[in-house]
Structure formats: C-alpha cells, structure tokens
Image 1 (spheres, rainbow over the protein chains, first blue to last red):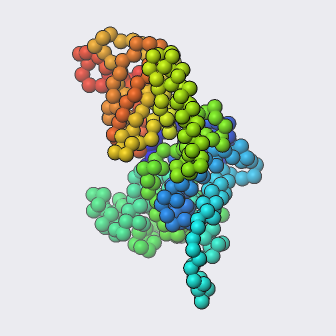
Image 2: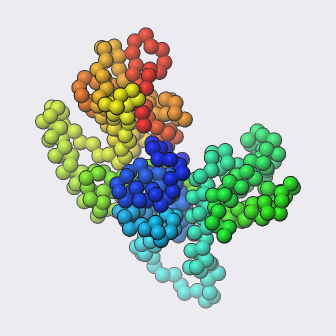
Image 3: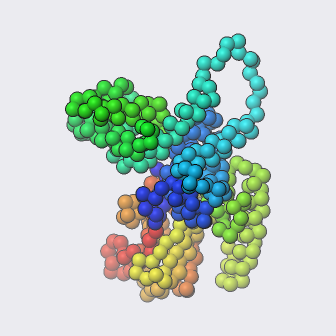
Length: 188
Length: 202
C-alpha cells in the first residue's frame, strides 16, 4: 500500500467528483484518485506492455495525463471510471507504439491469443475488479487474496490465519458480497 | 480453485449463490492485482503549483522532459538559493517530488509543509520541513517529527527547535514511507516521559 495521504476528502467521494476537483487544482483529490487507481492502471499496463519498467512509466504518464486533462471530463457523459480507463488505455497504447521491435517471422497459423476486443474486455474486467478490491478493508482483501491467488486451500488459509475454517468461509463470502455490492453495475 | 472449494453453496439462496458465483468468475478472470513497486508508492506531483500543467510533473525515464525539468530545477534552485541566501544567509537547493501539508492542532496559526525529495541510492528519503507559527520553546525543549501508523506516532524522523516565525530544517529518514499513514510533530520537553503533545498533524 502506498504512503497514505491526508484524507481530507470523504471516502464516499465519487471518482467523477475527484476528477472535477483535480481539474480545479485540488491536489488531495488527485492523490486520492492515485490511491484508488494506481494498482488498476499498473495492472492494465503490465497486461498490455508485459514489462514492469515500461508499465511503471505508463502509470506515471497516465496520472500526468489525468492531471492535465481532468478539465475535459464531463460528468453528464458518464461516471469517472470509464473516463479514467480511457486515459490510461491511451497512455499505455502510446507507450506500446513507442516500442521498437524487430518483426518476428510471420506465423503460418492464426494466433490463438485473445484478439483486440477480448483483450479490451479482459482489461476492463481487471480494471473494475482491481479498483473494487481497493474499496475492501484489509481483512477482506487478505482473505480474498489468500483464497484466490496464494495457491492455499481454504483449510490452509485457516491454518495460516489461525482461525477456524468456518470463519474463513464466512469472511470470504462476506468479502465477495461486498465486492458484488461495489461492482453493482457489472451485474446489469 | 472452484467456487465450491472456496465458497461452497451450503446455506446460500439461489440468488445469493448466483451473485457470489458472478463475483467469483470476475475475480478469476481479473487475476491478482499487481504489487506496486516502491517507485509507484507516491503519486506524481507538480513540482511547482504555479507551473503550467505541461511541465508540472517529474516523469521518470523521459529524458527530453527530464532535461527541461532539470533546467527548470536548476533555475529554481539558483533563484531560490539566491533569494533564500540573501534572506537567511544560507543557500538552499532542494528538489521535492512530494509535498505533505500539516496543520496545527491547537492553533490555526501554526502549520507546516514536508517536502520530500527523491529517495537516495541506499534508501534514505531526504526531507525539508518548514514550520510556521509554532511557539519558541525554552532552551531544553524541542519539537520532533514522527511518522504515524493507524494515527499513532511510531517512527521518529528527527528533532528541531524554532526561533523564528518560519523555520526550515533538513531531515533524512530511512523508513519505507509506504508503511505509514501520516505525520505529526510533537512538543518534547524536560521531565516529560514519552511522547509529548501533538502540535502539528497531517
């Protein structure tokens, strides 16, 4: 977790409100946006660029772009998350274009990797989910992380956290329910 | 791991199960969020609020822009150093990548700013702390800057005295700043065990 910043703004402040405040030069709003979106932007950049150093640069450029162009955000055209996603995607695409690669041999068979639309869909899903994870409290994030990405079974998670298996399951369910609430529009 | 392994269906209504299954699928599709490297622990910030946005950010590994910023920083350091040198008799050059504002806990007249420079090669964070409006203390007393965790002062960052309306000091801390959630300044004095009262806070 990054250095926590002075939280003078309520946690409930929407992304759109933060973008508008940043447009007016409010640095604390910009910093709160960074707290919420640094990880999703980094995840998106890593997915597209496949290199941590270049992805880090893309994060810096994305937030520089957000600061510069926050004034172009129009709340009547939609919430803040898709606008931020578009800014991030553009910064990352720009960085990918700058890449100079020697073309490989032309393959004989069509690529089996996901196409542009699938990549865009995967990117958006990760963006929304990683952003939603930032909203969970530490305990909820911990149990989700252990259950899904640690490779531990739920019994091993219980042992690791030194709590009963039933409590692990209850916590995991509660965390998923909280995520469902945050990801409300994903269900529409 | 499957939904049944992680969540199970026991005791869930069909609506609840469907909702949790959807979240489960999204989590699996999204994959784990990446760990942020220390370089990303702080947001990019304008080096000078008065600068136009086009040159406001210090971007890493962008040599062209870095050159412009280096020239600007040199000019700022020269002008700032000249002005500060003439006002205080000591030159000053400090390139901040991050600024944290502090406010008084007992008096609205007291406030402070912590300017944090780029971490050095061995992991120290140079800081320039500027405080105003704090009362001058008796000779054996001093102020101390702390990093906080869960609102509690846990890591001392250096002590200083004030003898003017505005006092500027340079401190260096070796901590991983990402592990802390704020800063406070306490007033320390003789005969006072432990932490003194907080006079400035973020």
